[in-house]
Image (cartoon, rainbow, N blue to C red):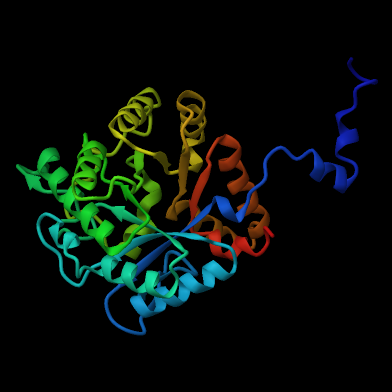
Length: 323
């Protein structure tokens, strides 16, 4: 039937009924909070371009994890800020590297929290690229060996999942192979399967000190114009053993999130990245937007598109409002 017999506004008039027929709901169980861990003691440096986010020493990261866990955030994604770098990023594979130290300390105090370690080289290389440079570009296959070593070191430290974000061809398979050989066959991999060469990463690079020293990352991160290629990347990662696939960034790529969920029937994560976060903060600071409503709408759009997991810097501030 059509109007006047069918009036869809009937379902919107009463707030209780509106909530009953709501199709998409965000839960704290959907959310992962990224954290930046650095050397030292008592360190809590705010990232100027990401209000409310900090570079924290291990002692403060442990406190932050306890706070997050108490408000319902049960999973965090760790990024390391090393005190020294090298040409290949192999420094991140040392059992005494910063993320490994943080993992051991967090798990000692809070064993139930779910720790995800980002696997990449850009924070750890002197040149800021995601792997070993040969003839002015990142050498794919040499970089795979570094990533595999990093993953095993993180696994030994006690992480619950590894998340390779480098976009090297074949890295999921190489990491899976090395984890299995070294006794970690049950450790899941959440792959940054479709990570685009995006302008939305700027504030993160301030936080992690990971800006490339020359050129850009277009030779390994994806062209933002390409959707079919993203599906190929995702399919290859699944074939290599990815347990969860990720799309990054989220907001400008909701079509990719939706296609991935529809086509592959596998858990999908989406990363609501630093630039997306900082735009909201800037608009709210100017009085141009209702921050809470804007965050809810953004996170709902990511969930509605098909994401099962949302990695977002808004996680802590929105968690208490989702109960």
